[in-house]
Image 1 (cartoon, rainbow, N blue to C red):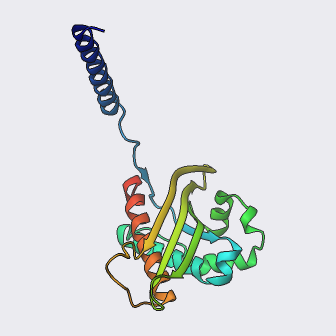
Image 2: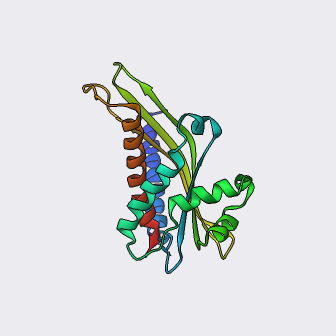
Image 3: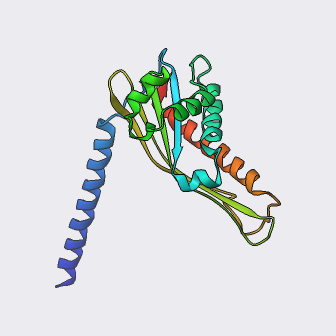
Length: 201
């Protein structure tokens, strides 16, 4: 290929790339972000659940995670009613087959119009580098269901929290319980920030 043909081919490729980028930008401008959903006067139930392996080692994690999320959500939605984490835990005890019940049905049982389901797919604490250094990892998937419509209206992919995230320069003098509590608090904060971008009061 001559030098002139090579330059022409490069120019066409560059023009095509620019055109694709322009079309992509135009598409982004045309497609607005999805409208925010309104909580309104609906009561909100937060239902965290984990596998039995996690519960054996951390039997209170579901209640603790529920309480942390509700605390964060109340700060953003002060006029919204939330089903207490203790009530959710009590309902679970009375409903041994609750894991097979669809989320909207659970919401109805708990008296909630919006059901927020937090599926903990991974949680562990482990010593790192020192006998008093503990790192906690929490991974969960979240979805919200409109109980009246019997439909999932919002789904959030995996949220991963590692605390402490940077273990390079600092040794944290902490316990397993303290690391667990910090990871749960960080998860609740991050989840609430994402939730607030999707739901209006």
